[in-house]
Image 1 (cartoon, helix red, strand yellow):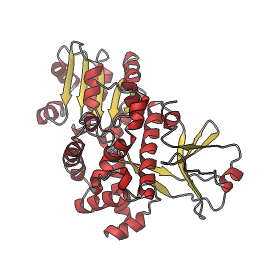
Image 2 (cartoon, rainbow, N blue to C red):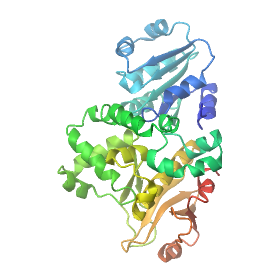
Image 3 (cartoon, rainbow, N blue to C red):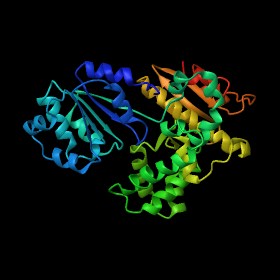
Image 4 (cartoon, rainbow, N blue to C red):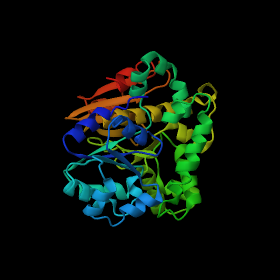
Length: 376
């Protein structure tokens, strides 16, 4: 069993009498994590929001009825909690009226659950995010040498737990993930009126990783209005399929100030969307660079989230097309990162950036030093 980075933090939160919410895409290991956390313990009740009878029994429940439902349970785990109507009120009743109950709620969509929980459990809960397996988690489970050797594999098939633990079956597992999660769950979310357009949007985004995204250009390409494009991108982000990176601008008039880049949380999902698992060696050099950038960016976001970092994350580019892949700003310190797949490829810090931000540090990240970026 691969140990997840947030296990200890969750244990500490529960020990301090906080309710815990765990958010993340389907199949990233939320259920496995909760089972691991409470393995061997007695009086643990698992409720699955995917099951109709669970949704029915919790609907309009009072604290008295909840006591009857829970019985002798001292720990209650509600999986896929966003499927349960008025889940915020249910969780509030548990935390307010049943202080002897340890409560964990998981969800794969940040829409209703995050909003309801934030309103209902303000100050009484700890929220955690869980992603596909991180580079650090895999290194801790095996070793650095093995995981460095597997970088090409990760760029093609990603880091979903079942993908990682099913060598030789990666494409089959990814197809099942696509069919059951992307095309079943997400495409059926209320508010998505044009499912065929969402599929086209996913493909357009998958082909544009590493590039600035224009909502109006995508809207023109797939023939819908730009507001719908933005709405669907917001849905995909809240379902942990993609994430957005804003631009960094402080000093220069020609810095891009309002552009965004979009990345996928998992490269296996990205490659499955475009139907391309051809080896890295057979791909265009520029595309490999974008794949490496996306994978590194997602891994860094996981690390910062698990470390509970307050760092701001951005990309930097000027109208003259001088750019830096990642800018992090924390406690007044600016660090710039440029990603290169080829360890021999040089990338000097752009002169305009160095002059505008002389206090910033600049680092190149490639496969030979990826451990300094993702493990330290």
